[in-house]
Amino acid sequence: MSKKLILLMSLACGMAVANLYYNQPLLADMGRTFHATAHQVSNIAMFTQIGYAVGMFLFVPMGDMKERRQLIASLLIAVTISLIGIATAQNLLWINLASFAVGVTTVAPQIILPLAAQLAAPMERGKVIGTIMSGLFIGILLARTVSGLIGGILGWRTMYWIAAAMMLALAIILRTFLPKSYPESRLSYPGLYKSIGHLIATQPVLREASLIGAMLFGSFSVFWTSLSFFLEGEPYHYGSEVAGLFGLVGIVGVASAPVVGRLADRFNAKAMVGLLIGISLLSYLFFGFFETSLWALFIGVVLLDLGIQGAQVSNQTRIYSLIPEARSRLNTVYMVSYFLGGSLGSSLGGYAWNWWKWQGVCLTG
Image 1: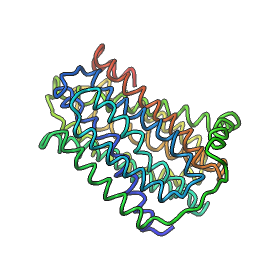
Image 2 (image 1 turned 180 degrees about the horizontal axis):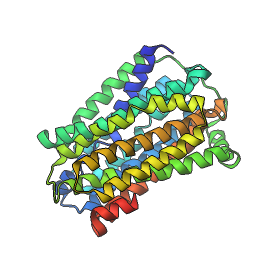
Image 3 (image 1 turned 30 degrees about the vertical axis):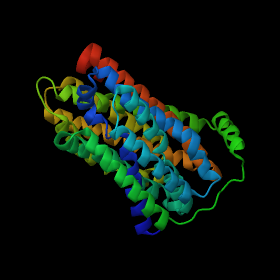
Image 4 (image 1 turned 180 degrees about the vertical axis):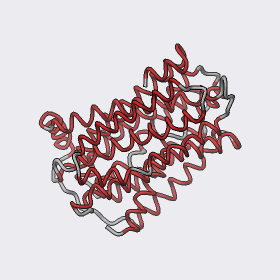
């Protein structure tokens, strides 16, 4: 793989996955627009992540049997329409449905990743996946920063109009520059789903990685869904702009993803996952014991992003090495589990904040 192609795939993953996270710093603003409680408005994040899990189940396995470049471009057109749905939402039901649709159609990154694994040389696979995942992680974090700033200055609807225009442009660029791929499986669509059940039943590493990923991303979502509510109260009184700026802090942790990928190529990936789970837990000790200290929040965000994103790279390196011709299906099982855990975390974060405020959020995480 050329460096230009890896860079293009990294940028594409970051830009596309950002659609899932624009709402997190804007939840308090959305709640005021629709006169909704913290728990009601946190459902916007929950429905987005549930939609993403559904979209991965429906579309990502098709990467093993369809030409991936055309599939990616088609999904980006669909997410453009879904983002316009959020920008024009008039009530909570409307925005929840549109957020679910955004989740369903924002699965292009999970088709790009198996394509990269197919194109990469075996000895460089962890490094390539880590590099592309860095782009994806930076997209996740910058999404919060960009949406917080644009939402604070121009309103949250403007953010979604801009996102729709970016997805349309990205569809055209990827349709032009991605290499044409050739299916690695001759299974029918029903056969693909039957084989997914077989993979779950016969691959203990896949089951283990999927459960770990679900729990870690649930913990991650608990924090980010609740942060804007925490920062707008005592002792900070910050708006959506500052909540979004915390995304920039996490880039320090995310920059380690290629390093984690290289370490997973050299050493035991499972041991790496265990170490990174411990780092994630440590972040919540900073959040819980030093809640009035901005420095503690900064350190906690770095540790949380390092732990969650590093563990994901290690987990995906593990599962991609299991059955080469089934990478899209293996990724489907892992990422569906991952985002179901995230959607549960978003909902629990809203409940925890409503009932027990910040300490409840930290204990839940």
